[in-house]
Length: 136
Image (cartoon, rainbow, N blue to C red):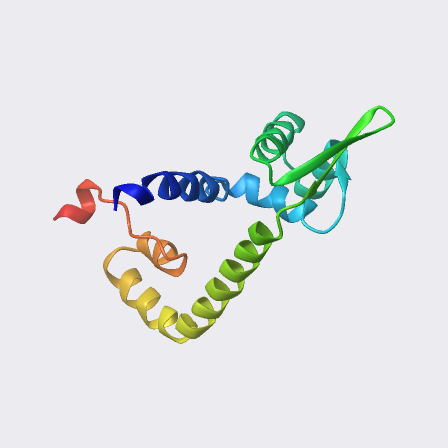
């Protein structure tokens, strides 16, 4: 197992690229089309500094290419495995949500009977926060 430690470390760093919702938006914006920072800001609604930070991280990780076009840098995901993983996860999660959609209304109704605020958490797949009211 020890001989696999370096591999596991690399895989963990690779998957860490997918651990931020803002970075996923950036990845989506540049997965098929080369774009400038301003293009990504416009498409994602994220701040320029956030977009620049994520684009830099993707470039440094070697999964996105960057080249200068005049005064602007343009980015494109160059690692098709990364986009395949994102696409597979999205399709799988949507399918799972659709599969469980018939169970959500009864769970939401039950939750609202006991804790009105928890109904929204259940419908979003979150557990209800523990408060003084819910501990009783």
